[in-house]
Image (cartoon, rainbow, N blue to C red):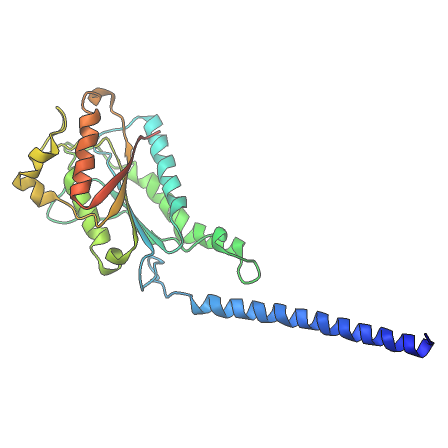
Length: 273
């Protein structure tokens, strides 16, 4: 092959390589632009105060903490760990509401916290069109730190004479699931941190839980029956050394039947530890 033919061949190869590399570069740029456009098209308008999308809640998790009776330091540490674990389980655009069990009056229990997770770095599929470190900082500042503050605050609530657990469950589920956005959430979860021993002038479980069928026939039951809207219920049981005779299988069966009759499902029942 002559030198001229060799030079022509090399130019053709270089030209072809240039076209290939250029096409790859253009494809990458188009991909980045497309990902950016898609990301912004699906960006949802959020409420400034809570960080929750205005169109719907992807999930709603309600936490009811019953510290009407004192807990020991080990249980306090376990409570802290349980609430921190719940915080990390909230998905992006999922709503979290935390309530203390308080004496029920004419008004509903006010939440200590309500807000939605903005998503963390784990929710960024690619660093090409997202910043995982920025997402982690936003999650910490806008969501995690606020939950941590509530975890510390809730343990300062003083004990009380009554434990109106039935009224408390009704109150928080009405507040959380009764709104149009809450009702539309496909995933609903109720977390109860309690000894699960209801005690009021209307009903006391200090001597043991009644058979649910007996309670179901009373006017009191119909007054306090919640509407769980197919929510999954998880119980972290605060074990009471002075009430071990009460925290037996009949207590568990009562709450299983109670949640089922309220259109819910008692999924987990485990000691707080």
